[in-house]
Image (cartoon, rainbow, N blue to C red; front, side, top):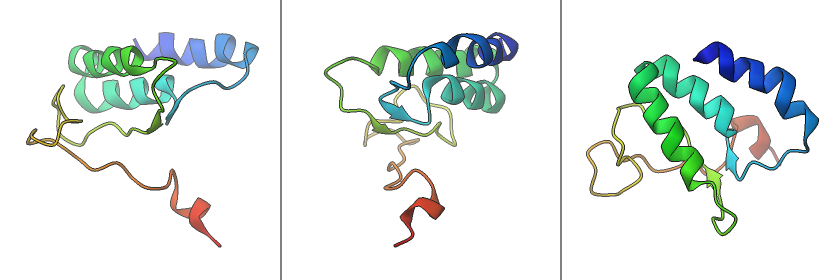
Length: 94
């Protein structure tokens, strides 16, 4: 599964301008989720992420959770994590 995502990143993604609403991109999110939780659970999180990527969604920073839960985005979930404010620490330099 990871090799298919890497193939997409190398051959398909460069053909179109960047348009992902989230950081990290959906393909990078999918690779991290699969590496962290395995093909089934990581794939489930990746599919849920792609389904959230709609034109009327503002997007933003959406990291793969440290603990698996399909509900990690809800505050009532035990796996809930607050999103980061900046994508990377070095980008916040003034």
